[in-house]
Image (cartoon, rainbow, N blue to C red; front, top):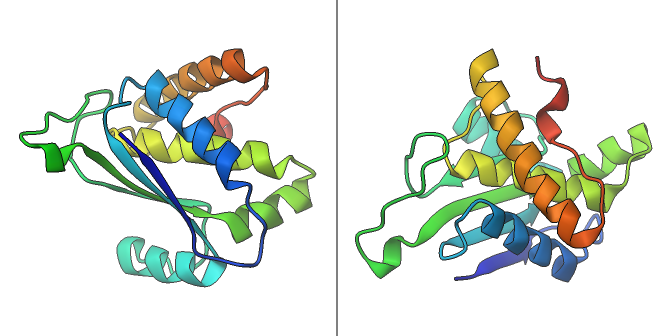
Length: 164
């Protein structure tokens, strides 16, 4: 199945092909290659609107995930028809992420991939609102990023490293 990537902002250049390849590899590491994923690269205005509408936090953010299925952490959806082979949509706040990377001196492309991995985990039911849930999500992020690192020679680490 496919990863559909749309760049809905013009503030920050995004290398779409490498990002799409990374998300495909991460999806495979999760055992979810047969599911579609939507990926939207968004600016601060859109992220602020979505964050306000869905999380009551009217401020830009790095990632928002909208799962197609409600599943327990680590479970794959059980589609009943072809149209249900969809994990959902991930909105990456690329303008927000870019600014954070500039402020911290971090690699934008790498952080973008790690943020996409975080969003993918949310699509599969992982959360980080309690310490046990965070530990479970952190382990899954570390596992899939380790697989991506093995394939690409990169050294990416989970986004949720400093939450608890």
